Image 1 (cartoon, rainbow, N blue to C red):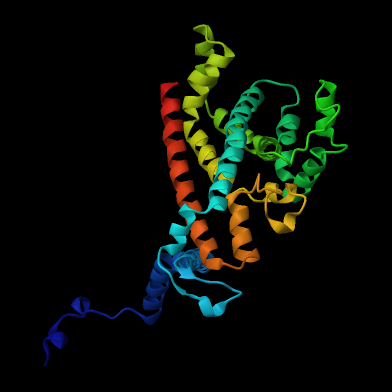
Image 2 (cartoon, helix red, strand yellow; image 1 turned 120 degrees about the vertical axis):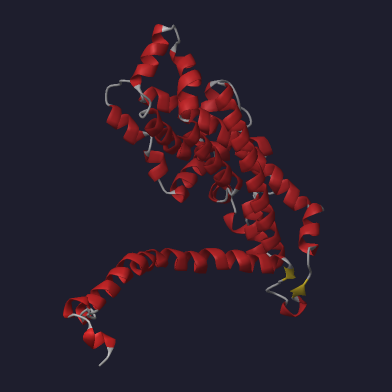
Length: 326
């Protein structure tokens, strides 16, 4: 007789029923596997439409990939990047991009901050004003840009009509597309009109989290509204300010729709008759899909990516330092 048979019935190990094993397995599956199943669509889509194009674009950037001459395709290493250093079109587009970026981003964020500060106060019809400043953001980019293109038209444009009221351009109307400074200013106006309200609502949401006691104490100490804005509000909403700076930097350096639709001949992607307002994004599009040189266009896109990283990092450090000093 075995030892198992000599043991009392109460001390024998009774195997669990099959339904208990099934429930235990389902419990582990439900807690350890199902969450990954639910989030897997995001990672699958991100891998297909995010990671793969990024890797493939990096491969194309070190190749000579011309759609009109497949026989010339092959590895070229860093030749495409070296070509950028002596490409006048690239440096012209880079200068245009930074010019429009400065004229749009700096006023955009400052005006948005001031508007948010005003909306944070007790005003009649607060809901109406908050919805109103968001309407430009809801307008399609193509529609708003076409309206502004008519607004800045050389003949019968409302911009020149406003200038004529102050005695400018009576004899010769200003051709906004002809010169760099005027084209930059017109495009920056389009960008500011669309994004000021969006950034203002972001600032406003952060401002409403600041306790009112802080402003009351500052008012007792003699701090006026302007001083309260820079000494209290801006430092306390610094994370949101940094976020808008980074977001505006990325959007400003990737500017494409506004200058594209502002051109009288958008299909050329030339940014004016003398490339006076052609941005890097436009140049990448032109080189890749007009000149059919995908390898060189890919190297430009990587150069733009590195430029965005550098500028966004510098802007973040400056914003944090300024906010800390305030």
